[in-house]
Image (cartoon, rainbow, N blue to C red; front, side, top):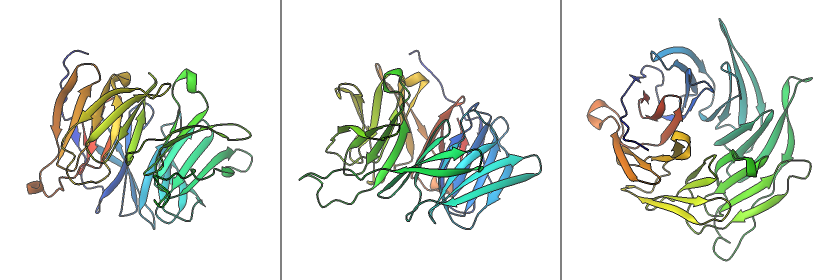
Length: 311
């Protein structure tokens, strides 16, 4: 890729009173949704940074996912174990909430009318039932098998993805902090078809339509592997800082990688050419923490959030 320059488009303010937990662009990149420990879900117009909608629930919201091909509806996962479908209308927000898990819902992934949700050790699949106008549980998927390396480790789901490559259609990829990556074949049986037994602690993952998977390894940075062969494509080390879960995301059609840290910066790498640039988050002098826990990309390149900014 050629040299690229990233510029701040807008800074979003006055939306949340507590820490931001998730960010997500709508399908067309028109809107940005943010959620927080204050129980709020805010919808922003990306072009201007205008706050359009502020929905306030009773429990902190930990995960977000826009409904496919829609700019007016998204799912929210709550600390109380509920999942809510928010539908925006010109003068109202309609909420369809249901109890999903015994644990906080930290991961959501949507494929057409099918939703996968992860909450601590629980992994469930839901399907939209048009006749009932609600999601119905289709399957509770089994926990990962244990080995001598993780026999006494806690089972914690850290990311969910539906496959984006043609060779891995209708597959659900699940990463666990201590138990590797597991792939389930969608369908009537929902069988586990493959396990990638990585020995590192997996804080999060991203997959590309080029058939690669990026892993945030909690120790030294980010590792990229081929999904079909598990052969390393690249190891991208940087100053992770404190061992907090840091995000990783493919951008530019899977040809580049952006990763967060706990030292107040996000780094961008070209998979072939190496380090491209470093972007800084607001400093503590502006009243913001230096920890960079969130990254999301859309039609507006990359974004990170402490006080949310669009890049």
